[in-house]
Length: 115
Length: 114
Image 1 (cartoon, one colour):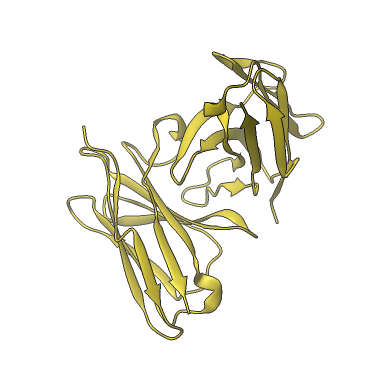
Image 2 (spheres, chains in turn blue, cyan; image 1 turned 90 degrees about the vertical axis):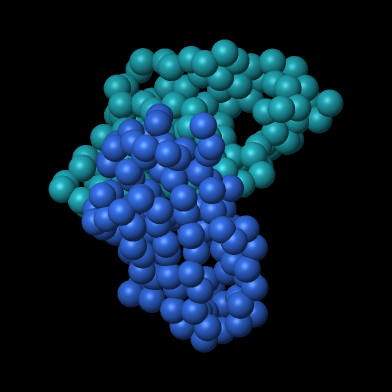
């Protein structure tokens, strides 16, 4: 069974640009969560999607948005990039929404660098 | 605001040593604490602790939660070079119809010297 895949693996953007990251969950998984990881702040929850609906949202500005498609693939968009958005963006998939952390699998992440 | 603090920030030990990693938390409506191992990039789940005083074990790893003192420890005995990783803990609040949010610590970087 293929794991969680994220594309692209690396991105370099400049301030003010926007970026779209993609996450394909494990086949059959319907929940996708997104996280931002920086050295200073650690891993921070962005949002969770389940069955094309945003179920949870973390404390991030509206520049961060996402969506989920009918095939459970999810995209995350960051508009008007700032230097502080440089981070590793991880997505995680699980079969069900919510507290199935022992059955939540992380992807390899997308490393975003904003210059 | 919920907060999770891990200590030490980094730890370097020799193969075969035993290590204890600490995680203290302040989470409103606390439900569970999670431990993850992060090698390279993707964190992998280790333990979920919900009840105080009940040790969870997986091979050489074990963890316990103290809900009175608001902390958890992760023990690794007879460490191996493959244990080198960043260990993350996260506090989980009671779900509230979509307001469930994890709060992660910044991690402990463990390095095992052969």
